[in-house]
Image: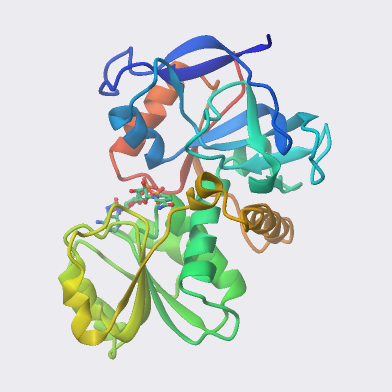
Length: 335
Ligand SMILES: NC(=O)c1ccc[n+]([C@@H]2O[C@H](COP(=O)([O-])OP(=O)(O)OC[C@H]3O[C@@H](n4cnc5c(N)ncnc54)[C@H](OP(=O)(O)O)[C@@H]3O)[C@@H](O)[C@H]2O)c1
């Protein structure tokens, strides 16, 4: 039996509790046919980590962590996309043990080749947010290089928004992007990543957005939709589209008068449901890596902690729970 150092939780404790995350030696599961064994060099932390730690049953001891960058050490019997020694980045899936462990098992079909121009640390800032942003823009809203119109990105300075602005800038030349940003520093971050306009979500959003797009925006991406449905009904044009990645409002009836469509995006759908097209996550991560290596996208790391330990993960979880981080928090190296 092979073992690995892992960081996880037993009970759903507040992050201020020193026992909210702890370290253990756990078994490395045998590789399935499409699995890779990856030596993890860096991980990043997402809101899903904190939500799961606070509310999901641990089954005794559960390892969190979704984003990772590392090196392939072994491959399963049916693997064709990678070989030992390859450097990879990926976001894993919610129904398998997470990446907060030194040796981690992941399916090749949801794994990408790491951008060669990035360190492991910067590469780990990207995958989960890139998959979410990509699937929102191209699979849910069906945008492409011919698309013409205005996109409002709500949550633009967060992890997902910071990648979405870059994807829109790189691949959607006919789309004008409006980004939410709560102060001038954050507005500069959003503009540097490609937003043409910024609006402050703590002020009158309809007045600001309709001042830029008088007929309403064509598309709205939101990471923060709670209590916002009447506002969205006002600022999205008739027959427009909304894609939401948070837990969303319970009632979308106010959208009916303008026949506004509501889409859900969950980046775990493909791996959890084992959809026939789950390999698209491999392809999109490879495309993102190419865009990074061509200098058309960049890492979104704003805070880098070391080593990967229960202590640094507690620090990162606390920052994420504050709900105000810009870009991504990444952890790298082992004790
Ligand atoms: N469905 C999926 O597949 C999926 C994938 C990734 C994330 N998510 C979810 O999406 C949400 C965002 O994820 P993330 O990684 O981008 O989060 P994040 O990086 O933690 O987001 C923090 C950012 O959100 C901004 N923000 C907070 N409240 C806001 C509001 N009401 N309006 C506009 N901006 C606001 C903050 O800016 P200010 O401080 O300036 O307000 C901050 O820059 C989380 O709930 C996460 O669980 C879902």
